[in-house]
Amino acid sequence: MSTLPKIAWIGLGIMGSPMSENLVKAGYQVTGFTLEQEKLDRLAAAGGSTAGSVAEAVRDADVIITMVPASPQVEAIAYGPDGILAHARSGALLIDMSSITPQTSIDLARAAEEKGVRVLDAPVSGGEAGAIEAVLSIMVGGGQADFDEARPIFEALGKTIVLCGPHGSGQTVKAANQLIVAVNIQACAEAVVFLEKSGVDLKAALDVLGGGLAGSTVLARKKENFLNRDFKPGFRIDLHHKDMGIVTDAARTVGAALPVGAVVAQLVTSLRAQGDGGLDHSALLRAVERLSGARV
Ligand code: NAD
Image (cartoon, rainbow, N blue to C red; front, side):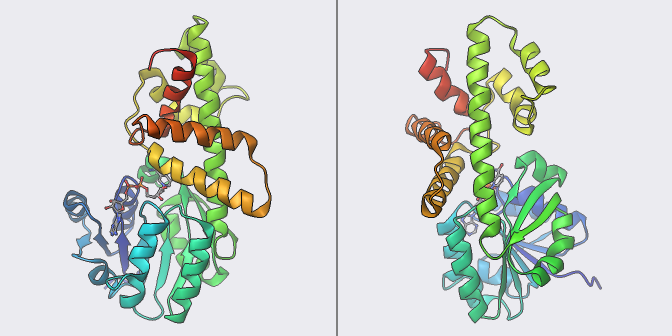
């Protein structure tokens, strides 16, 4: 009999599928629930169990992990009549790994405490590749004892695992992460258009840029997307739009000005308006190309 905690995993998307499978590989008993049948079949094929509802998934779980798009989905799954707080057992640990507003995490922790459910916010960075390779950065908000209890689970999912502060802190750090990533992609996209218009070999240029101070994880991970104009997600523009809303709103609340971030947020909005919301965020290149009258 395994002594490892029983895990319920809600949300088997681009991130949730490989992450939950990594827990199965690490020996955990994982019961998943998500909206797409093919994703449930994929978890079952990987050795996990599946449930027909959130309630069924979480009923016997020691640890409940959510990985869904945004605050409204987290709230529906947590507070709904079929949801976590109505059906989790007292003493369970709820780890929300979605990227949502810090305030939603703070409110959830408060509401869950009344039901005897402990909460950590634990959003991640590293993308689909980081999820598959189990090398995610995991930024955590909540209590030290709960963090210590969750650490073995985090270690099966990621490499850089940090308790950032009380509830909501993980989400605040994730919002900063999304600001840095978007601005970095935008800078790379502007460089790509500039290089191509100047007639420089793009692959040679990106290779040498990657070895200097201009190099970044963003450039390394997105280089092929830029070179091949391959914008299959990855991380969808729709989700980065949500995250730029989170960071600009949270920054306004604390009185932090984000002038460059605000411009990039507008470009992300423009991409969505032009029908590119389902593409990878490296498609910011398309926004720059439109501005420069280059190919799109
Ligand atoms: P996704 O759209 O691929 O997957 C979301 C999953 O949530 C889907 O499988 C959907 O069925 C499920 N879901 C939605 N509502 C549900 C409900 N009511 N009940 C059960 N399941 C429900 O999204 P993703 O790319 O995996 O991203 C998930 C979260 O992780 C987002 O908050 C995103 O911002 C964040 N994130 C994504 C990446 C990335 O590279 N994709 C990287 C870091 C963080």
